Every structure is written in C-alpha cells, then in structure tokens.
Image (tube, rainbow, N blue to C red; front, side, top):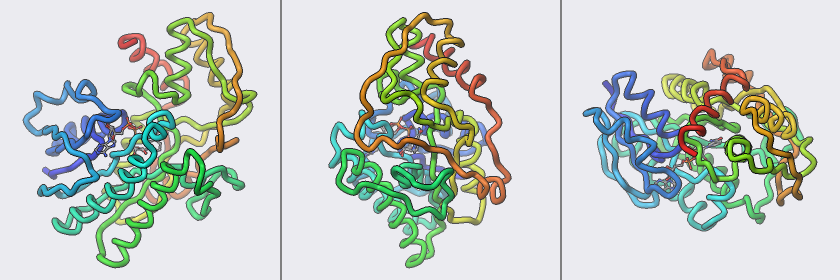
Length: 308
Ligand SMILES: NC(=O)c1ccc[n+]([C@@H]2O[C@H](COP(=O)([O-])OP(=O)(O)OC[C@H]3O[C@@H](n4cnc5c(N)ncnc54)[C@H](O)[C@@H]3O)[C@@H](O)[C@H]2O)c1
C-alpha cells in the first residue's frame, strides 16, 4: 500500500483520481483549499479509513510523509483562473516549489498536472511534446499558461539538479461528472444550457476545434505515467477533433433539448485549434483513450441531470 498525496484532490479531476487510487488499495491524503473544489466532490470517500481530507493552500509548505505526489492544485477554467490572476501564478509556481521541496525531503515521486495551454495558440497541429509553444506572456490567459510553463521548468530543474523522480503530463481538455456547472468550460456549459433550455453560447463562428477526453481515460493515463520511469512531458488527451458547432449539436441531440444556438465574439487569445499528438503516450504508456465522445457525453449529462 502506497501513501499518496493528491493536491487539488477535491476538484473535478482530483476527486476521480482519489477515488481510483483508493480503489487500488492505497492510502490517499487529499489536500485542497476549496477555491474551486468542494467537499461534496469527495464526500463519498470520507467513510473510507484510507482517505484523509486536509484544508491546505499549496502556496505554503507542507510536511507529510508520502510515497507519491500528484500535483493538481490550480484553478483550471478561464473564469476561475482569471478571477485572481496573481493567485493563479502563485499557486502554480509556489505550489510547484513547495511540492517539489516535499518530494525532495521525503524521496517521493511527483507528477505535475500540466496543460496543453503550454502550447498557447499553436502553429503546429496536432501538437507533439517537442513543440515549444506560442504563448502570449502578457495576456489575460498568461497567469495560467506561463504559471504552468514555469512549473514545468521547476520540475525539470529539480530533476536535473536534485535527481527528483518527476513525471509531467500535459492534459488536453478533459470532461466528465463533477465539472463545475458554471465554470465556462465548453462541455459543462453546453450541457447545463441544454438541460436548462437556455441558449447554447458559442464564442466565435463555431468552426474552432477542440478535442475532448473523458475523465476515466485521463486518470488511467496519469496512474500509468506515475508507474513508468519517464519524466515526460507526455501529452494526454483524446485526438478526436470536433468543432464547437458539432459539439453543440451532439449535446442538443443527446439531451433532447430545444435550446437555440447563439454566437458571441471570440475572447482574447482563444486558440483556433487544439488537438494532442498522443504517439508518445501510446508508445511509452501503452495508453490511448477508449471512451468515445457520445458515451462520455451521456455519462456527463446523467450527472448534470442529477445536480442542476
Ligand atoms: N480539466 C481539464 O481539462 C484540464 C486540462 C489541463 C490541465 N488540467 C489541470 O488539472 C488540474 C485539475 O484541474 P480540474 O479540471 O480538476 O480543475 P478544478 O478547478 O476542478 O480543480 C483544481 C483544484 O485545485 C484546488 N486549488 C486551487 N488552488 C489551490 C491552492 N492554492 N491550494 C490548494 N488547492 C488549490 C481547487 O480548490 C480545486 O479543488 C489543474 O492543475 C489543471 O490545470 C486540467
């Protein structure tokens, strides 16, 4: 049995990760400041004696004994990370320093939940890990993008300088149950709007594309990555590419909603296209996503029907 720390464990991805790690017989310490996460996301785990929940902000050092650390603490949706951008950068950078310091002290392996946003608005499609990205350093998304880039830098410098066992995964759009209903991310947005019978809001003309990975596929890849002797970075996502208009139409069909589609101007620095090249994940982790968009959407719609 391993003792595993999950920062941001009460958030969307973190709560699924805690659940899976517990299911595999590990002890899990979930650390969260509840900025975007909530106790509700992990309340079904509370009665498990192998689970512990701690309110803590990763901007401050943490002294615990663990074998592995998954560092997920960071608001992930533009609405949340732009709410207090200075705090967002601090969470990424100070959080990485504190968790790497902990890994160094106790000799733990540490995985960073990085992001496809490190590629910015890319000129290369799909994006391989070797692509350095095209990020605006002073825009409204920079607190997140540059914060995550700096965190990656710290991980690789701790690795080179202190021989810490690091793992870096670059996560592309992931969706599923326990996403925030009002965080502005496109899948939850469309589903909630469709279920409420409100207009479905598309920013831009709807031809910009995204790829969507179902949460269970992502969690499996993260756990495989931790077990591999490979620092990464490795892209994790679903290479299936859909336009916003196609996504809206799938959601309308699967919910049976009569909502109309309305168009608004594209926000600043919004990438036109985003799709992972997952050849490294296939080769190194023997992983590729299994859950098709319709199946994942159905599971997510069922969740939102219960909670909204
Ligand atoms: N969901 C995605 O599509 C996606 C894509 C790329 C990267 N990621 C990364 O995965 C991680 C989890 O994302 P998510 O989608 O679950 O988002 P989320 O907002 O649901 O989860 C983030 C969690 O971190 C916690 N948190 C934020 N600041 C903190 C701090 N200073 N100290 C302690 N806890 C803090 C929040 O309360 C929340 O529980 C993030 O690091 C995010 O950048 C997610």
